[in-house]
Length: 173
Image: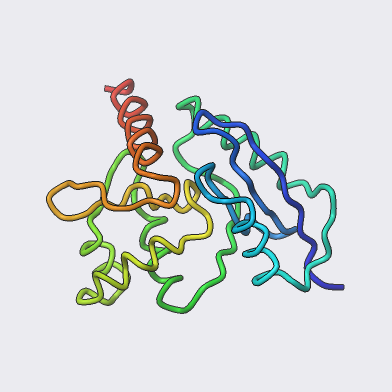
């Protein structure tokens, strides 16, 4: 039997977030600024062979953990992720996943962590192709000199996510 795939919509302070999970992990998160056809097209391209099912247990866990994150009560996700990409993209996404809550790295720092310090532009492209934002926190990647750079959910969403994490971190001090 092939891969089983379930999709859901999660209400967040950013708006409706579309998500896709398999039995083994979160496959895709599309932030509100992403188009619905882009989400569906991505699923067809990457998981065309998957059996679509109405519900998988990870749907509930994802909804719960996203709710806790947006409430400032969760700093790390326990959900397994299964991003599909090139070897380089996956190296970049692993480096991004290691950025601690409330902290940022520049694209150059992520390139170095991914083992390709001279591939800053390619790191930016790989960051933009991240299929699982928030869980793989690409909003924590900024341009040189503290500028925000791009974000699939838009710069307002990036600002809001960084502010949420700064506020939650400040509450501990």
